[in-house]
Length: 196
Image (tube, rainbow, N blue to C red; front, side, top):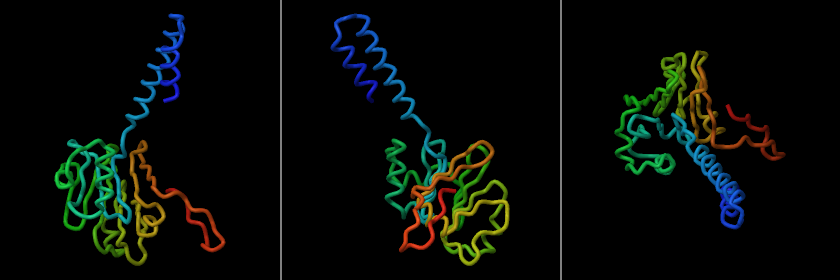
């Protein structure tokens, strides 16, 4: 923005054609840079706080796994994508496999993100755990994280991370939480771990 402003002022205020041309070039470069920065891609998969909703990039735009619940997250995701669709429309879009008690999004690098609805005992988590899969399970009970090849975002992880963006990172995935890591406080016990 500063480059656009300074370049525009230079183009308007200088009398010399060379200086005005340099100002116009600087303003144009600033606009291009701004445009490229603004066109950064949105995460392929998003999970709302507490794993209440899963959103995935589909061929028709952001697909949501539910018609109700987590309304603020749904509205925010659609607005930030520049999508004018109603929630009901987004919940019916392709881009997610919706099954009984779960929804699955496939990332461009082959990983899957699966949100498990309701209670998720350790046996259910172990049954759904597979290589290259991220399980989002707020309702995980007991010993939540199975010893297996999947990544589990259980209640403890979701409390620590808040809403989650899940993106391909080469042959792996990058998981970013919306909540910042908290610092240790005298009254709060141990510090939480940082971002996964």
